[in-house]
Length: 195
Image (cartoon, rainbow, N blue to C red; front, side, top):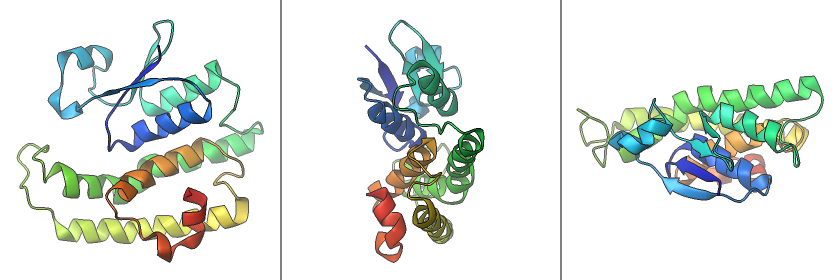
């Protein structure tokens, strides 16, 4: 059976769950708390990062980008990368935008301040969230939502067709949505795309 080791508020884990679902590949979830550094999990992921995919046949793949590429190569039905090289590059660029820029500016900040600090999951961090960091993250999120709206209005899907770009963006935004922090009503095009 295919197993995805994940964390609930890991946008990368959410991205891979979406990709597996779009490809209609059956899988079970195994919840990991990376901060616990369980020895059994570290044997699968020496870096202690989620997600980790254990595929049928005993193949283990670490790192969300490697997993996404692996799934595209091994399960080409329902492709989530466009056929044209320029379109594939655009899908990868947008996925990298969310995995990097959005995550640094908004996603990670919100989860760190609103969840990790509250539950003491950051060693040495105070339990009180930094409201300035939260406001900066919310301001950055609005810029990203404007961008999503523009892309969705022009293209339908972020890279022109349903792709890993949409999986990455949705995975990241779903974490903020879970926290109730996405001002969807202010960004109707982004909201329609997300729905």
